[in-house]
Every structure is written in structure tokens, then in C-alpha cells.
Length: 392
Ligand code: MG
Ligand code: ZN
Image (tube, rainbow, N blue to C red; front, side, top):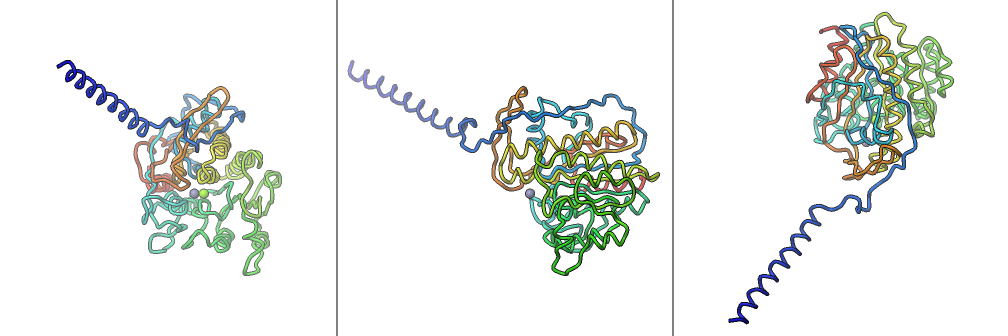
């Protein structure tokens, strides 16, 4: 009797012991400590910029000017990496109207920058790779072209090639984003007042032997090769080709992007009909593809200074709508640890591609309340088109 009793107790103990072991094993499988994962990437911090607060601004009723700021590959984790790195604050916090943009393209749950950009610029869902054309390949007017047709001045500024997918959707109509030389030709034939980025090679060292910088000069468009030359131009149309291919990373390229943004605004603001300006922070995406937290975070810090430059003008004039959004998220980034004092950020990634998640939309200025809640990326173009057309 005594022995049987012991056996039962032993068996029970064994079952309990094994249950705990399995439960613990299972828990470890389900709840891996992210800090122990090998692919955690760390930004060490130490790169800070000043943030300006613009509370309680009484905006004009309708926007005269529109500034569209696109962070390529910028999801909410990329934004918050920047916010953590800058001691918990960004210029972006001045935006009180926020929403989400659904980014799916016509032929894919996960968009690329060409289709995502075409949706933002032209208001149509198209196939991945397409630049300013619909699913059938038919050119669709973009909002910059619409603005120009209404007498507004227009500008496009990027840290990528000026003929890269995101700027191209505001300047060109081509079947594929890889048609760099054709897109450069479209830029020369466009009526854009200010176009700044890299990509000089596709203008001056071409298969067709044309020198598009000469063509621009013949049209009376000034061609500049660095930010100082651009800032020295105080009137007329101007193109900036600041690198043979891509402009350098931040901070190696200095404050090229915020400076180009501020000076583009200076050149465009003189028009009584207002202006449309698109600025792209291109390399947040490149950092996402590489799963490099320092790369992403530094580019995000630079982008927030671009946002600061736009806000400085918009807060003063009170007649300018500023929209900040993205074409898609890149990397499946997730911030797993951070330090608001040192600016350190740790993050993990799903993989090195774009993801299908919605991206944030931030709006500041007259009619900012239109850009809230869930929307399609194409809705952003449609609403901006309505504002350009003065369909309030
Ligand atoms: Mg881009
Ligand atoms: Zn990308």
C-alpha cells in the first residue's frame, strides 16, 4: 500500500515536472527575448537637432501652397526611431491631423516606390515599376502638372537621383522606373521650375549622345552641381544635379536636403497663384533594405529637419498645407529598445524588402482635417488635386 502510494506520488511528480519543462520550452519558443536575437541593429545616438513648436496657429481657410514630403520606406517604427534618437522629440509632432495610407499597388499586395509614388502623384493604382502611367500603360496627369496648369510654380527635391522612381512620378510618364535616360528626357521637357537631386550621368553621359544639361541651358534653365550653386540662384527655373548617381548619405552630404527644401520654397513662393513642392527623403528606404538601424535613423533625423524647414514657412504664412507620408514601409522594422537621453535605438527587422503595412499620414495647415483616418494612397492625390482645383 505504502509502495503503491509512493509510485502514484512519483508519477504525479514526474508529470508535473515534465509539464513545467514543456511549458517552459514552449514559452521560450513563443516569447523569445528580442534582446538575445542576433540581428538586433543598434544606432548609438549622439546626433541631435533642435525642434521648434508651433502651437495654436490660426490658419487661413484654404491652402494657397502645397508641400508634400515623402519619406521613402518610412513606417511608424522609422518615425519613432528618429524620435527616440532626437531625445524623444521631432518637428513632426507639430502635426495634429494624422491618418493611415493603404499602399497596395494594382498588381501586388506589397508596392514598390514607382507604383506607390504614382498613386500619390497621379491618384491611380498601377503595377509595380510603372512611372506616372496606369495599369494599361496610359499616362495619367500628376498633381504637379495639374498645379502648373493652374499657374502655380512647382518643384521636386530628392536625396535620390532626380530621375529615380519617387521624383520621377511627378515629372515623367514611363512604363518602367529603370528607363532612367528616358525619364531624364521627360524632366527636360517638363515645365518644372525647380528639380534637385542626383543622376547627372543620365543627363550628360547618355547612349543617345545628347547632353541634357546643354538642352536645359538652351531652354533658359540654370543647371547647378551643388547646394551652394543652387542657393546662389535667386530667380528663374533651375535644375540641380548634385551627384553622378545618388547623393551621399546623411550626415556625409551635410544639410543638403533641408537647405534645398528651404531654398526651393524661397524660389517658388513668389508666385501669386501659389506653389506645389514635393520633397523626398529617399534613403530611409535604402536603410530599411539593409536592415541598418543607424542608416535609417540618421536619414529620419535629416528628414525631420526637412519637415522643420517646411513648417517654418507654413507656420509663418498660414496658407500652406504640409503633408508628410510614405510610399510604403521597408524592412518590417520594429524598435525593441531605446534611450531618450543618449539617443540610442535598437531595432529588428522581418527581412530586407518592402512590407504591405499602412504608412502614417501627417497634415499641417489649411484643410489638414481632410487627411485623417484610413485612406488609400490614391485618396491623398485626389484630395490634393481637389485643393489645387479649389474644389473645397
Ligand atoms: Mg524613392
Ligand atoms: Zn525600396
